[in-house]
Amino acid sequence: MESDRDPVTPLAITSLDVAREAGVSQSAVSRAFTPGASIAANKRALIIAAAEKLGYRPNPLARSLLRGRSNIVGVGVGDLANPFFVQTLQLLSDALDGAGLRLMLFPAKGSTRPEPSIHEILHYRIDALVMLSVSPSSSLAEQCRRAQVPVIHYNRTTPSRDASCVVGDNEGGSRAIAAHLVAGGHRRLAFMAGTPESSTNAEREAGFSRYLAEQGIDPVIRECGDYAFDASMAATRRLLLRKDRPDAIFCANDTMALAAVTVARHEFGIDVGRELSIAGFDDVPMAAWPAFALTTYSQPADEMVAETLRLIVALRNDPDGHEQVIRQGALVLRGSTRPVS
Image 1 (cartoon, helix red, strand yellow):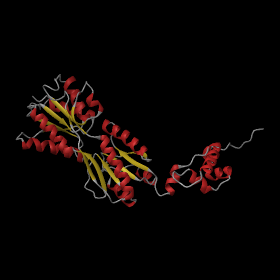
Image 2 (cartoon, one colour; image 1 turned 90 degrees about the vertical axis):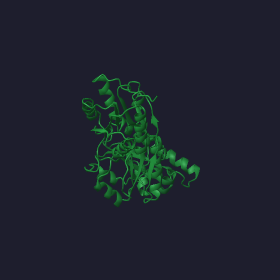
Image 3 (tube, helix red, strand yellow; image 1 turned 135 degrees about the vertical axis):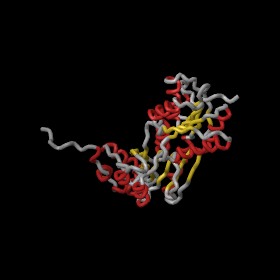
Image 4 (cartoon, helix red, strand yellow; image 1 turned 90 degrees about the horizontal axis):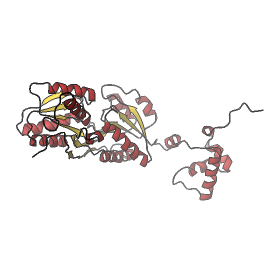
């Protein structure tokens, strides 16, 4: 006759069960699963064999919390439709894994709207919070400060002394694009803005406009694409239907530039790269596709992620050691802009 009792599952096995099976103390089991802990090799082997027999798996979250650290890094992201952030997440996940840390992703809506997941994520006692091109709400920033959770802004600057930031060279890159377009003979230039409140957009627009003003070129025509593909298609249509249609468009990121190329070529029949130059910012993988061949300014995502990881490790040891890091990229010339003779 079969027993009505459920069999013991691996989740029900504790370190005490392993200790009894191996004939050792519970503290010895703890040392056996702690890297670098002092324990004789034969005793460790005995404990590991007992653990495998019972199906025991240590709980890394519980163990890390006992040591005062979760080894979890929270990452808030507001726009996974942007290929630059998909690339960043992959690089960041790999970098954190290599450092023995884990990534916990949650949606973030920005400074004007509260994050619905924030109360839960702080309960995990995250070691740091990385915000991907979105600013935390004032409530979130204050809760992190009180909980002594360091905040790192990625691809976004901040005036706060209680947070770090890692960004590309937004102003320098935009000046480089402006110089390239001017050298190509363009004089009616347009800027397609992203979200107006973002520091990234403000810095790119400032660098572009200042360079043109220094060259005595009329103020740029401005439209807003809100960093979104559909909104940028609509913005491109408005630009190309103007009587004073621009002969060059600089978009504040590649997503908007790819939308602009699509509309110009397929809706207006424009020879992009000859009749109209279009440039972006970020150098996402799609920018290099022959169908787009987009001129852009690269953001060194690998270097930016490496700096982010360095800050995470440093801030765990010194919560007040915040830094502002700028990593330079490079102008990448492709067929979407007029070649300079």
